[in-house]
Image 1 (tube, rainbow, N blue to C red):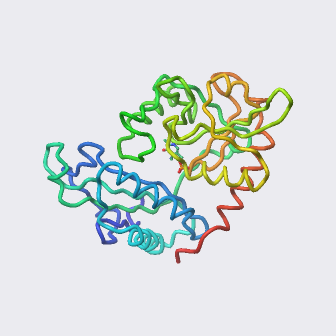
Image 2 (cartoon, rainbow, N blue to C red):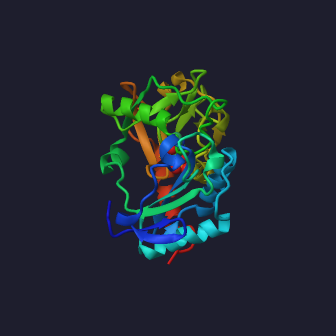
Length: 298
Ligand code: PMP
């Protein structure tokens, strides 16, 4: 944490060392709130509107009425980026239920807390982008959508953290999480794609549908859009682990991770164990897109 960074907290920009939230905030007491993670490339906030849309959708799903309109939040994010003169970095936005009492009742929290942090980001080491990443399938299943829907980007990330701990203990950076039906859902903090080849040698991209119980990733969406413009067929389709083990290529997508080739899963090689041709094409198309899209925030 850089104490000099200016944090947006409930309408004011304050130095990080003074940006404090109450222990009675229900975001802290209960994980009651929603968040987003965004990236800044060349002073531009990547896909800001899509992130705002998802943030406000998540808020609506948990009956949280943000204290700022979507366009006010847009300005607040840009103001925070500009105040920190951040050319490249990461933004975390949070709406928590706010200060309340020790009970669950959100009516005791008169005003949601708004936080915007714009800071540097540490990516995976360069080798994983060049050589590919190893993943495992974890025992922790992704939350059932009818219990706590993964489409809501809520502050309640314990399900993902338990999966992350399994990754750490296995010595790998990411994992595959299955849903309650045993189908592939997503990673602990990323979405998953494969390149499937049919018996006649035709290849297509496949990624689980949102109905499998996943977060509708903004990087996922950008990659699907890029695939379309590059003429690579792409379908949202339920998959089993067999489909992943038999895939020609696999990669994961996320705001922080971007596009990462997955070359080993559960001690098996994916394809020939090297980042595939379609994966590499999409990696470079994505880096071109993120460097050119949008307007500078300052
Ligand atoms: N799934 C989960 C569980 C996530 O937390 C994230 C974001 N880190 C993603 C997928 C990827 O979404 P996005 O591309 O919007 O960052």
